[in-house]
Length: 195
Length: 270
Image 1 (cartoon, each protein chain N blue to C red):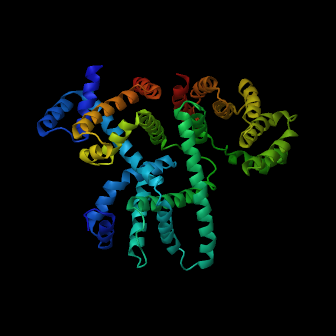
Image 2 (image 1 turned 30 degrees about the vertical axis):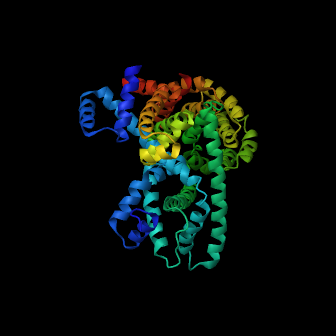
Image 3 (image 1 turned 180 degrees about the horizontal axis):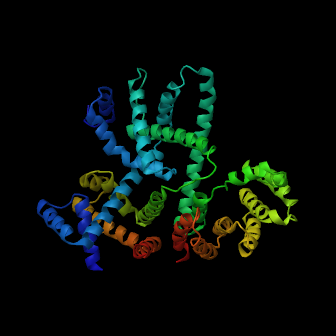
């Protein structure tokens, strides 16, 4: 069985091997955090959701009737999404008993999260603005596919893919740093720093 | 410009592990000695890390096997209610419909994000988001205690009770009959306006609160705060900012919120 294949990781989870959980964390925690942020949660929520999602995964793979019939990453996503939806339901129930916020301790976090959301929108919008070749080459690198495999799939030479990747990334950064919202946020940050 | 592009290209080679050992050492040395390059490197890394997570997340969301994954995930959540079979039947149905609702909501959110990115809805969504973050129904516990103890305040207490219970239309009807009673006029104005806000009739609330703010009401800070939120909701950002600036001068509950909201509003007015 190929090391780090989904089935291999499932076996390691059943054996409760630490490296399986490290692998899951390295591989999926960032995208689950992003999912929670995009669905209105905070970074702290995301941590809890990921941990609870892993507990749910352990319960699932321990079942005798468990058969993995999808990608492991997609299963982690589905478990974490369910966890977060249940969490949202609980939060909504709690809010029914709260009439008014008396203090505002998370103000700074909210500002940071709100800026972070704006940055994310800019990054993604700029990425989607690039031509398809740039998106595919950078996308391949970001998915940690080897440059050779990207080159073979796209019908380019290895050297061209490496060079084009640098040009595309440079262009992406130019789009981001020239984005009107990005400039506006930076200006606001400067103003607030002065104050 | 060429220098700028060259810098980002070198950083790209670095963050995608396409530099040889000597080049890595050289660039790391430059990063540690050059604050501007260091800042660029951090931004480049931030972009890379975000896009990595985003691309993976989008792949998961559009995976044709997602339905199978959701069925498997459903097995875990069924386990939790194993002993309460009847309850499970109800909750399963509700969960599924909730998931369907959330999928729909996510699709709507994605559509809105696309619209924003193309400039079709430039700032309204963000203003709504800010409103949702800052708006909370007014808490009238002090007034209710006072009202319950004196017959004079019975009618207005009923109106406020309706407001507190979320029965906004009834509250407006109840308070409507009290406009002529001058010594409770400020309360009548405030809670009528608050009820209009509860109903989403911001323009009506705005009209009342404007007259309260311009008058000599004892609920000046409250009126200014909720009027500022109405302006935010109706897209009058400049008016909201200027009102919040005035409110910042009042010590008390709204001072901090007013300051932080006004700072955020600068984004829309710059």
